[in-house]
Image 1 (cartoon, rainbow, N blue to C red):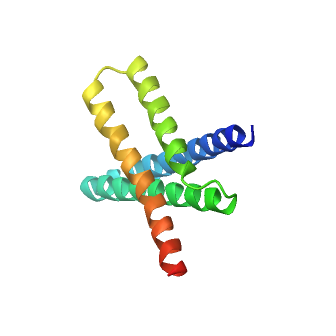
Image 2 (cartoon, rainbow, N blue to C red):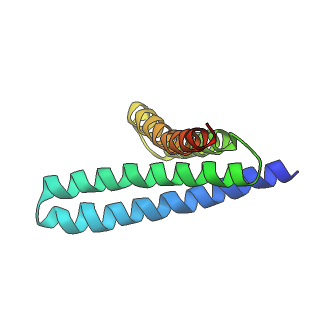
Length: 125
């Protein structure tokens, strides 16, 4: 039961983190900076979004390892991306775009988990 609660907590916290990253990227970079320099605003928005996803993945992996539930970040990221993809597919029109976007989300989240686990492994050697 603790593992299920851990997964639910990870999903909720990750979703809140995605909302914050998306809102900041959209509002600050894509809206504010796009009015002054559209390519710069768009590029910074994408970079901020990718870095935000990597940080969320890193934080999930660190929380999992601190609680002794190793590699649960993978399941949190997988469930989160599948749920996001399903809701997008229900309410939007282009499935190829949504699948590619969600795959990129998953890779960025797992990239953060990989960075954390690689750092932990290097410190134990």
